[in-house]
Image (cartoon, rainbow, N blue to C red):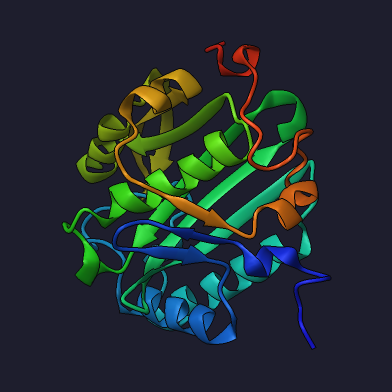
Length: 232
């Protein structure tokens, strides 16, 4: 029996020259949890606002499972979090998320991601974020995408710079009992069109559209007004 009639998100696929992004099945979700247990970043720094990676390996793995299950269970068209596993040659290398509140009105998405530590420095972060930005702007008709990174997270900031994001202010956070500076970043649809360089193909979006809350059919180009400029 197919899950697709009840959960069409399971059929959504984003492909780039080197990667495939899809909703994880149980085996791939288990692989992602194991990847988290092995390590996501240099333990000397904490790149996440929620310091989930400071836990012991088994707890890190469990938190990945619980987070995905929680997002699935809480999904509403007015408030959703789509967390896709990233596959390279069929191997799970990380996860790329995209989410929104009141997307049909605000046309704004946020993104967040991580890669297994052994997959850093290979250009995958740029390619996987480019995939969900294509989904947002070309597939769903978004006007804006927002992200953020701590000032010391040069890898994430570099990805944002390549993709055309602009500065959108700062925030002060406390991480590991220290004050840290978070740089907010924003990408408009117009900036995305100027900087996009990664070819992306989308499969299975039409059936998913009601789940995201947009008001236009898949494949229909946003009108000119939709392209005007205005977490992790």
